[in-house]
Length: 194
Image (cartoon, rainbow, N blue to C red; front, side, top):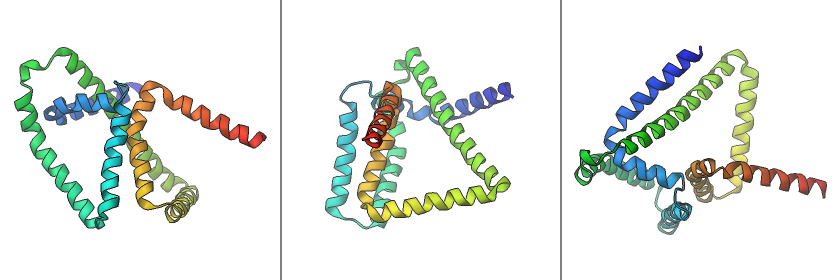
């Protein structure tokens, strides 16, 4: 069982690496930013997301416009990045160290994707095996989401969610996630004792 899981992870990682081959010059700096390899990268992440959300807040575009502009930008990036990166970075500048880093990134990303897939399979299994637990959990989560969505401004909620998603890899890499969790836990337990 363990061997088949390792083989599956390796196969998935190699497929992911093949798909990301034309993006390799972009992935390395992006990974560096997400993992906060420089001390000012969290500020850069927050600055970029704050600017984007500030523009959305000021311009107040329709949802269809936001979706269309986002998809247009993604399409342009998908079309332009591979040829531009191959022009700016010739193949002979790709080193073994960069290849090793790309392998590590693909392996970590593959592990995350496989964990999400196994979580999805677990949810489907729970739905089939224990439908009462599944539906009670889903209904509870959706009611909480409805309450949060009706209480907090949607743009602010989306801004917070995007920042949490973008800052999480850096927190995990720097080991600060556990310190933040323990700080929150200690604060909550201190408030209960008071």
